[in-house]
Amino acid sequence: MDVGVTLFLATMIWTAGVLCNMTTIQPLPQASNGAPTHSRPLLLSKLLDPTKSSMRGEGISLRGKRLRAVTILEAPYMMRKQNDKGEQEFSGFVKDIVDKLSENMRFDYEMYVVRDGTYGTLTENGTWTGLIGEVIEGRADVAFAPVTISSEREQVVDFTNPFMDLGAGLLLKKPVTEGTNVFAFLEPFRNTVWFSILGAIFGVAILLYVTSKLRYKCNVGKDDYDNDAKFNFTNSLWLTYWSIVRKGGEPAPRSLPSRILAGAWWFFTLIVISTYTANLTAFLTVKRLVAPIKSIDDLAGQTAIQYSVTEGTFLYSFFKSQEGTGSVYERMWYTMKANDRFPPASMKGVEMVRNSHFALIEETPFLEYTVRTDEGCELMMLGKPFLFKGYGFSTRRGSPLKKPLSVGILKLQETGYMSELRDRWWPKNGCPLDGQTSNVDKASALGLEIFQGVFYVLGAAAVLAVLVTLVQVVYYRFIKHRKPPAATEDKPQPTHYRNGILRRTTTDVNLF
Image 1: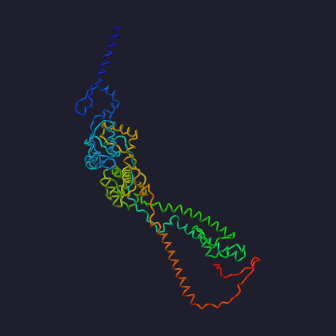
Image 2: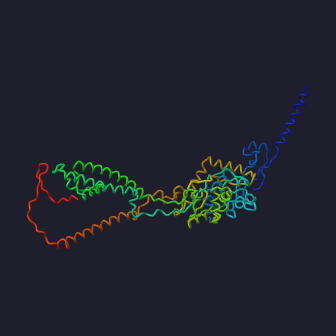
Image 3: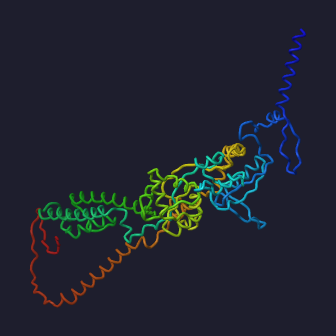
């Protein structure tokens, strides 16, 4: 019995010693006034604070911490504006994210702008520039900026979970709208269709004239009803014309063959006019753009338009790393190096696009914002995005800031706050991304240039009518009346019997 008690007491003493070693005292972060707070055992601290963990990156809480952050000025992520007090302050998409993280996680921060204005690239001497260099050198705890996550950067810094997905796209100045054709009213049909319609007009007119003349010569039909004698070639051509413009005229077909032919012709003109009217509406109201480049392959395969990427960005490093790969990106890199037109900042690249024949290769969120907010709607995005990546905040390698910031970003995404910010900073009702129209909510008004051809045709017809009138007046007044009048005799009009009915033969009907 004494041995059992002794063993039990020894076990209790050993257990108490282990617990004492585990419950070492750890000071809590100091309060904002600098006074130390009460300490508590580490084991209890872990139990009471679920954000604490022994895993790397989870050993601290950001509550009460003050971070030194670096950023870069680029709309709409981070911009400077003047507040009501006349002081300069930051604003933008990333600023709103950081403010929300600061509010939820109870930390403070101070932020400064990177001196060289770049995101960061690896130099020849092995050092990094821009935001990445600031974080590596320890001058900043974190880079609160849209830093593209790449394998090269991941080797020297840590990234939080991405807060935005992106791709690479092309920015080009909107090409001049196709010049309005003087005869724009002819555009709904191709030339082959117009010539076919013109051939059908003359073909039907000739067929109508031949059938009518044949019936008249062969005394077919009823003379008191049929009007085959009136369908000379001129009147036949006139019928086919006024039928296609949907206006009535004389003479009207009365015989059965004429009505069969005219009925089929009227059905033909109904389809043609309906199709023409529908196509004419689209051709006159939709302004089409002729885009010289439609993809990254088109850009690489031409030399008329110079192109480049912004210096110091992920895309700059990406194209530079393609040397020796034999890919289309390598060919593009050598072309960009030969042109040597790398803009120092993204907005400088946009100005180059505006002022010259130049294409900028940039990340799609920036391009979307730039095109949507363009005052003159002179810019457009081309092709499909490529090189899909993500934006994240960068910290030093092994920094405990990565985990809590990543968790905070995930929570903002789960609550829909990120989508709300995206809708706030990227307008949906601005200029169209493809540049097809200056205002997507307002129909384009038709200008006089659209109707020039119609006015020209009307004017030409008016001039022709006046000339024909003058020629006829001159002929009948000064030429025909000078001829001596031919002797006229009262001769009986020749008559003949046709179909048992006495008919008078007249020479007034012009059968051609």
